[in-house]
Image (cartoon, rainbow, N blue to C red; front, side):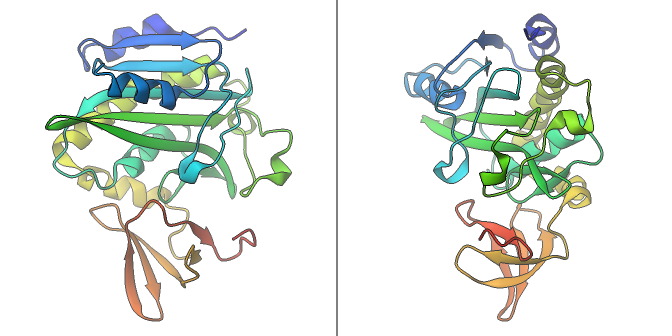
Length: 255
């Protein structure tokens, strides 16, 4: 049974996010879905919602995120946020997570953590309007062990315990949440610019041939100060800004 360090997390994050609470649930449809429901109902207090199991977890582009007790860490954080520019938020979140876990973890634009050419974690960001500000819900799913049916996934899956054998869900959560809160506060005031250099150091697409979902091919040339992916194509340098665009290394046959 997982021992969740809820009090320790609250003690470190509450000074950064006044009114912050931590909730641990044995099962829910989706932590993101639940916090979006609350946001639309007008609940704006910062909250961390952790689920030992999700029955309807969601990833980017509507994909399922598989979650079983003990095999993954799934949580969402909700808080009001008012940055001048939202561009690059998922990249800043990914950098925070990777930095907190291990130096060998890379980042695949726009919101996946990779290790040894396999997906280790994913991020799903959603927002709800609250007058002039917005409530942001940041969902994170981290594989502790590769799913048993990982061979059937679009991208091969990795598990954090392959890299850090002693790591469990509670320990990983404690590592991730306080730095994530600090990242969000920094992003709110400075946008993506403070994170560009750190992201480039972990960019797994840099210099690689890639294929976009519309079939355009080119070579990835990193990201700009707004978080856009730069791809050098036959027609010149292209800025890819939409998170709805799928980007795959050209060597990946599952396009």
